[in-house]
Length: 296
Image (cartoon, rainbow, N blue to C red; front, side, top):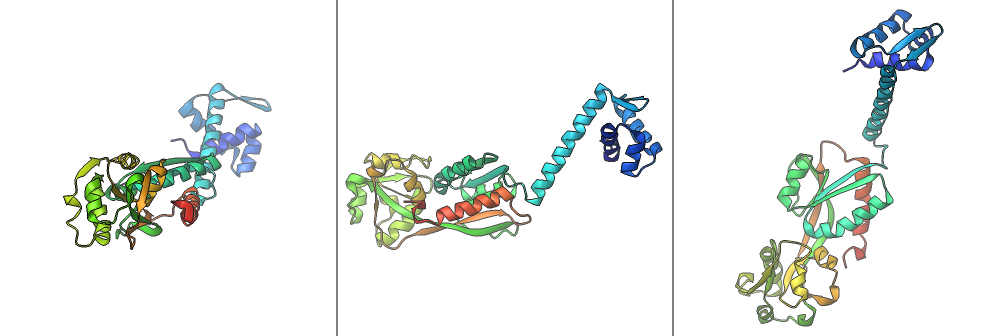
């Protein structure tokens, strides 16, 4: 790597065109200025032609001058980023469960439209993958349903998300277990666990979700409600996944009494602060999710 002091001497010499004035500005001797230039030329070849009262850069000298300008810009960008002053450019990387992700992603895109210097990178993943990705610095931010107790992670309350029993709009009258038996269950990766938690409160003493006929299965969060909308069965799903479904008129949320609610925790590495643009994005998202219409 080229010595930064030599490069500083060279750029000053190229600007002033004089060994004497360069030495005065940098508080060096003229011999030191000549020595710095000689060191660079030993590495890179002839950089400047000394003429009476004039210094002319060679093509190699002009290339080195352009390189020094790039280094200066890179240094300024780094200092801005580390100081947190560069809030108008950067990446917002977030990994989250699918349901909340369906609500988050359009909000993140709106933020990117408002801040063209931002880049959004989002991934859907279950809790274990979210934790691993944040710990390995693959994503700066994550959302999980269980608060981690790892000292390397900072966790704060983000929002709450109730579970919902969703049935076809034409079969929304569900009053007893037999009504569910007639419909059948549309399953998904978390379907059995979610349905057990919710239905045990709505129908205490029932034989359990495992006794119901399984009418379908999907591991794509955005498609789980498609068979429900077509009248093929019911499911239990988080509210944000239900609210993101485009054909709301074809489905109905069935009242189940006391809500079963999951808390969503925002996590990031605790050893260092989040980037400036990520902090601004978090504030905006918290404000959006605090509004009643965040998930309808």
